[in-house]
Image 1 (cartoon, rainbow, N blue to C red):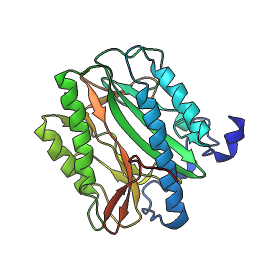
Image 2: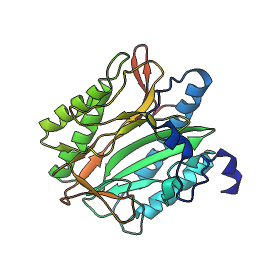
Image 3: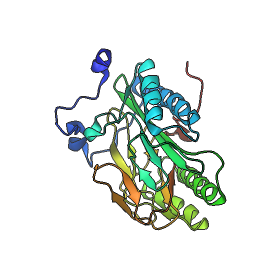
Length: 279
């Protein structure tokens, strides 16, 4: 909407690329504090509200286009801009990844069906700062295989979060996640990572979710980032569709994901995208 133009993460590139993100790749991890950290927290808390609104729509017969419309409207109503919209030419306001789609699914006119699973990934931009989270939701009554997969994805996220405290190495997050996934005999996607977030949508650190990775960096108070493991019932490999966004499992088996944005504190970690009252 025109009245939100001043809030937008601007790009002069025809492909929607972020020149600032490209310039910041591999840079030192920023430490957030004070009013800037409070702004990130507010963007995250409002993004939590928006995800809950989108997730509440999930039922057989609803299209992901409808979810996108509601998410977009809820974002604008809160004075925010949907971070995915036009980001590297992504055409919608939310990512909706159904069944075998690992991530970056583009909302469309297909109706959700009984037994599907759908990941809703909400990212929002408020007064110069981004918030980011996602959840995988059952469509109707799930079967045992879907329950196992989705519970594994959430369990892996929480295993990764449990490693977060000042002085720990970022590379150990993936060790904890893959160890938990092996208990379920489920594979961990290697192509996509968690990431730093703040004034930029994606920045340092990069956080792989698999074991024995080479992630650089030591956690410090004020680091803000996401952990967002994607796990598959079959093999971990993925393929990107011709739309240059949609990522699918190569074997057609299902995938699930959960994500939180968090900040390292003196006492451990604070989840910024958990549900909370907004003052």
